[in-house]
Image 1: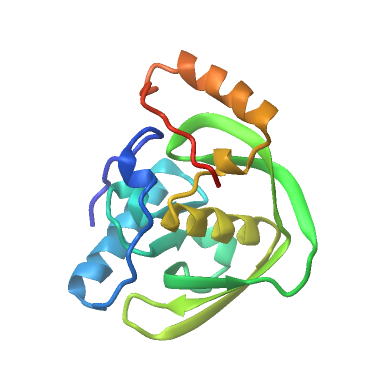
Image 2: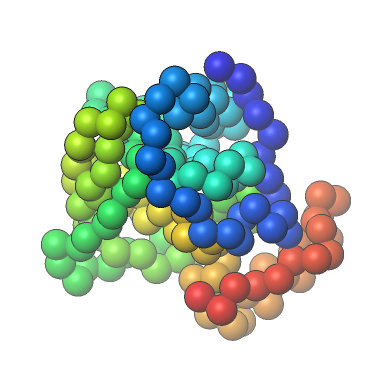
Length: 175
């Protein structure tokens, strides 16, 4: 297990849709372990493989959000049991120090696999639902800033331009 550097907004790896995992092998389990270790080090809510520059459909969730349940998903597919929404603060380890209210679905059902290839389902609401949706967006090349209205996006870009780590090549997705 290794703590790895997290890619920051502007890195093209964050904008490429991730590929389906086809091999549930030791390499995949090492990736999940590295994601867990890196997430724990950064004290975030979730972390997706593209944030480490790995183009696979895998993410981990902070243990406190899953309360002893499955803390990672491979090849997740989301469904929503209702139309209820939530609007609340959201941040991203790939966009350090930026938090904006972001509208998400309140409830989610995520199906996928464990790192061993076992089918799994995670049902979540509130913060767990937000995290699952946020990390699945990463697997699709979408950042939470893409979910902001034009005014919020402009405020965010102004804030980013002042950040010492900002890469001026940031391109917003049409999503």
